[in-house]
Length: 201
Image (cartoon, rainbow, N blue to C red; front, side):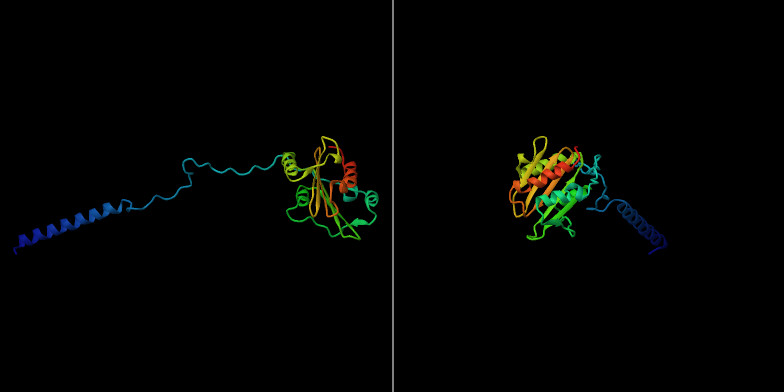
């Protein structure tokens, strides 16, 4: 092969090499088939961005009454001389009494020294926005009891292994529960005493 022929061959190889490099560079600048763009935090069409639950603007009113003020020793003795303070009492988890405590209410308990029956009485002034929900839950689960007091007072009794009383009067929510409450009348004397001891409102 002559010198000129060799030079022409080298030029041709160089052109092919340069063309191949340019072609590869062009491919590299494009997204590979099947690749996706980075995910973004924008919500999909039709989706709503979740909003945080607002903090209640009407907090509960703390109850400053003691258990002896909610039910005096004299009233307790008149109900049953054999009933005394249950010093080791604590509300059960997820109970109405625990809800009362969470809302800065007062929770009290007394026990019968003979039978061992425990009487729980709890009072609270819940957030005003919660009252309708509490009343709706009570009327769904329990029986209305007009003998606890006249309207606007609302009273309910739920029978069971442990009878449960709920009373709503103004801003007050009263919960009473005991295995000694077989029917609404079993708690009537205690509820009358408690209602008489609570301030109006």
